[in-house]
Image 1 (cartoon, rainbow, N blue to C red):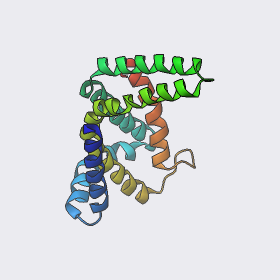
Image 2: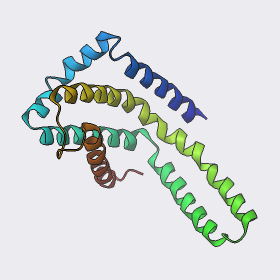
Image 3: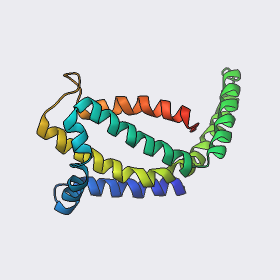
Length: 174
């Protein structure tokens, strides 16, 4: 339950910040003051190169936050237990009562996993939201589409999934 409370607080805070972007000028101006001369310069050099470098840096930061902000050993144990439970569930496909019992056991892992994985979210979600709002402003002014069709969001999402899968293997993050 602790993880769910943290998640709720962080989500509310994130929505407040995102909603205040245009209303509270100091938020928008501060982020632009920091990111225009840094990330903006990278994007001005070359949209593809700049975006790839920015996504790599953001993905690296979130991956390292996950690795060092969570109990990786405990997550590995939970993952191993879940795998054993799934194999048992395959055996008992024909026995609804036993299957239901195993599913209940599987649901018990959700709060444990949430509690373990929410801590890094606290450190990364607000900066990511600020970056996303800045990306929105930046790409609104330049009117650029990646590969002629992809918005910055979809390009970010695709590239971050690729980088995340690579970095998670390199850093052995569960």
